[in-house]
Length: 280
Image (cartoon, rainbow, N blue to C red):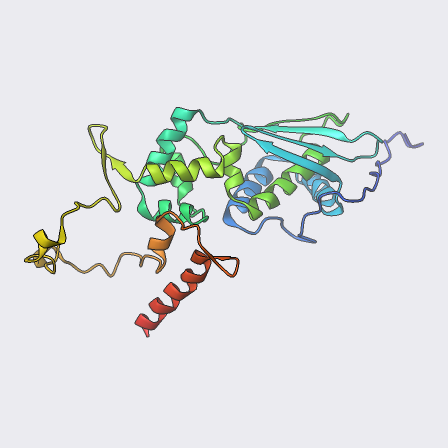
């Protein structure tokens, strides 16, 4: 304590090899999902403590983080020799809740295709909201603790971990879903299996690529006839154009490589080039 009676600000012990966020100034988080997470934090947390947390995150004071269903743990080096222990908890959804969510996501063919391609479209947050299972925690959905003596909330150690977590979400958006209780591979497997949509009776309807299989010899007379009558064909210019590599995104990826490059990584640019050629 200083002569004036105020506690002098502590200086953290500098560490080597800590986790440094890439952002050197300004906001942290580049993608919509990490910015959405940051917006939640900045709406409920003290700006001053968040600012000190950003400084900790940029100087590498966060030693490590571990993310699992419903829980993030981390160690943060402060002014004391022993690092502080941080825990951040949210609700992890049950298996039956994830079945409801995967059915709802699979019912939207474009969302399903993008997720299978490793993308997370912003609209999936609406799907979660419609199921009354929020994707991101709100102000009352974060349970955070730190072993430091600071009674402010959140302390700078918690704030630093939150910013490091946001940048981890930038690198892998599926971590947001893993925090809610489902790993990337488990989600993608569930989406591949849930290719159809649920009917009003609860039974599963046909999937996106479920078609009747008939021998070609039995279809000779009608093979080239359109499956939809001309009267039902209408102007669809108002609908968003599907991505040119939609089929590649939806089907299971073949385990084939050319010069150590996955074959899909070679085919996607070709599909896009073909589509650009059709537009010209």
